[in-house]
Amino acid sequence: MNQRLEAVVTDALAALHGVLEKHRVNEDEWHAALAFLTEVGRADEFILLSDVTRTSVLIDALTHGGDDSGATASDVEGPMYTVEPPFRKKIYEEYEGMGDDDPLFVRGTVTSAGGGPLPDAVVDVWQTGPAGGYDVWDERQPEGNFRGRVRAEQDGSYEFQTMLPKPYTVPTTGPVGRYLEAVGQHPWRPAHIHFKVTAPGHETLVTQVFFPDDPYLDNDTIGAVKQALVRPVERRNGHLECAFDIALRPS
Ligand code: BEZ
Ligand code: FE
Image (cartoon, rainbow, N blue to C red):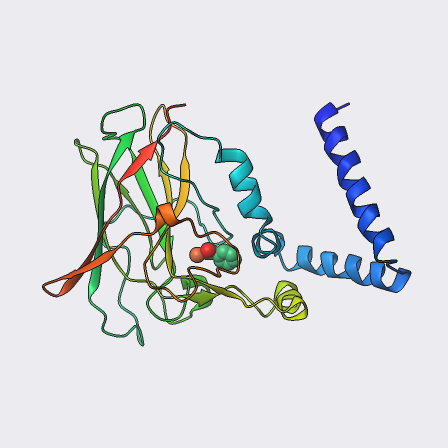
């Protein structure tokens, strides 16, 4: 028997039964709840449900919250990561309707929270475009657009070229969209860039970078904004710049 599983399941069922009793949930309501969860599974929306119920944020905090190593704050991965995007400095191709915003250069250094640069670090990023959301939601964008990996230089520095993302709504056309509507929760996320950073001898860091003055910084639908991850963007002769230094926890 798995003792931890048994302990968690016992408490989870006690909490669930308590809620059902408190609200006198009836058979029709319970069957509707089961049908909803069945639909969530069929639509492959369980990560999305975990995110919008802010359960992913809680699990992130329970997993990484006590970290006092000096490592960069973690954040939730969300459902949009795809493995092994190409190594490239410019992570996008132009597409129709993307607008004429100036490019954004994101730069920083990957170091060990234990000290010293990490020249073998791989910085894997994904984000929405300046118009139209993620590549997989937007048929105007080539597959894999606004996704890419760069390897840190000998001094730990990294850089990639992208465009400043905009706020977007999480998917609303499936069962989770119906849930959001039913509970009166808006579907917007503030603009952000996702990072997954790996280096030998260090724990993988999954995080997100946000930008100041975003209308959804204080009310992200998945509740994932951390002030420590908000980074200014500066305009310099025809382009934008954002600095993001990353420290990884030794494993
Ligand atoms: C994201 O940040 O990529 C995301 C999070 C929750 C739902 C959909 C997308
Ligand atoms: Fe995202």
